Image (cartoon, rainbow, N blue to C red; front, side):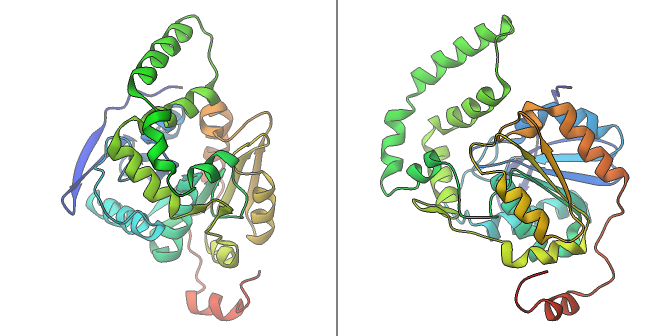
Length: 304
């Protein structure tokens, strides 16, 4: 189910944004948002299956992949506004928003800031749903950690490891989970990439854990069909966050994939695509007719 969709580019506010697009442009749109240190390539295993019936767009967020890496704002709010402008340039009025890990936090921020753009919300191993996160990410959030990254990530070592990976791949010795983790690690070999990574990460993670928690606003997600997808062996963000979010979002759908880690769309692409396609086919685009004011007044304490 792999994809070799070519990267396209568009310039927004003077910055080049790379993206991949496939499928039926007059149909409903699915926007795929990758995670921290990721890129649009992370969706290669599912794009083609989704593109049979839908318009599928996978951007490289600023500071990631083949998009520009400016010195600027890498907050969740900035990413959400950037995606609003990105969709406007592509003439997409609304979309089903699928966010993985950090991209899930961006997706929730986009839904909060610009609810008119959201047809459905899909959170995949999402950040922003609790304090807990892997020890490695908490370690990288320590002051001065960025100065050690060039030592820990020398480009010659990465190039050699990539050669070894290709050698093993030709002999069908591979792990989708490890390959995706390595791709994220290898992306930090460039100075601009590391700077963008550190700015982005420190906006949501500190040494004690995640700093952003959308739990008190999750009731707003009930306005649109919402699905939560998680691997039961996620070692980056615990699966307990999925169950808690499901309880807080009235009418949400929960899909826990067995023997899957932090990258369901990479580790189990067929099962992931099947779940998303079923969700698309059995729900109608939101939001519902209830106004935002009515919802906010009905939930003054932030609970459902």
